[in-house]
Image 1 (cartoon, rainbow, N blue to C red):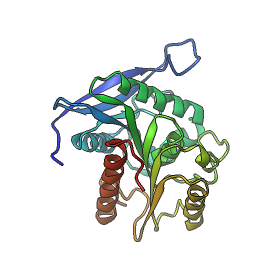
Image 2 (image 1 turned 180 degrees about the horizontal axis):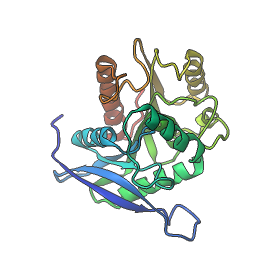
Image 3 (image 1 turned 90 degrees about the vertical axis):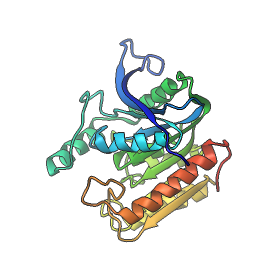
Length: 261
């Protein structure tokens, strides 16, 4: 597929239609879309604990170059507007606190739905063809986002804690598996200390139990964050294979709106 030239921007998304709050709450989001005229599926990109930083913007651009309109909402906007961090130990500790103690499932799903609603206002976007992709904390959140009716295809990378917790310490996210209505691909590194093998097995078992169209990928020698080329844990081989699988998922499902096996 020929890569597209892009138009990129940072936008403000109103939450007025997706929240009962009287305030006109807004979140920021990074948007990348092809300059070539056409109608394209929409993809929501869900950040790691480091915010919508250079890596997440790069992933958003890479997706858009393939022929999608991609949007990366700031999932910490309610806590720290404009948050963007590096990969130091201090950044990791701060990001974890924001992610697990100061976000909630309800607010995250509200922000993702608002991002989808924003995409629907763009003439270039197919109104019934949406997917999402997430990494680290965003991989966990992508598993939650897969339960939204608009989401037809989900790629969830190394989301820790899915069988044991959810943002805001609510019921484990795994209990929502039955509500996934689209196709989901999940990606794990087998050297990832934050995701024990039994958690991967539990996720796989639950997806099969409810007949969710899915594929689960395990990468030998890959650690947490293996897709991010700005982290020491970057694994080029695993990242390249996972990227191919993501392209296949989005192309098969969103181009035709038919679930891939």
